[in-house]
Length: 55
Image (cartoon, rainbow, N blue to C red; front, side, top):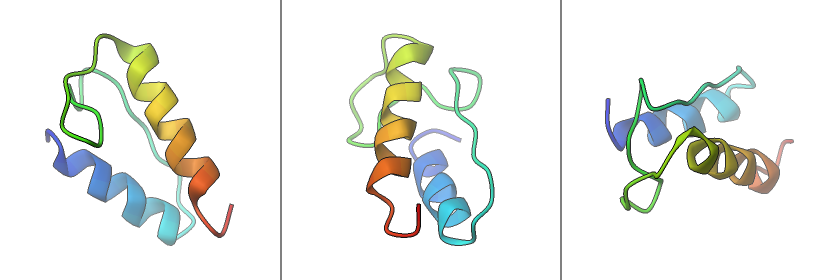
């Protein structure tokens, strides 16, 4: 868990799988800063999806 969740999510996108996020899984953003709430985590996940070359 922790920041490693972002690497797992990136790998899931690379393999065209779904991904999930929430404070029950990770409490930090991809840059290591603390997430204030689930909305911060969802915004980071959306940014990751939009920046992925295959999406």
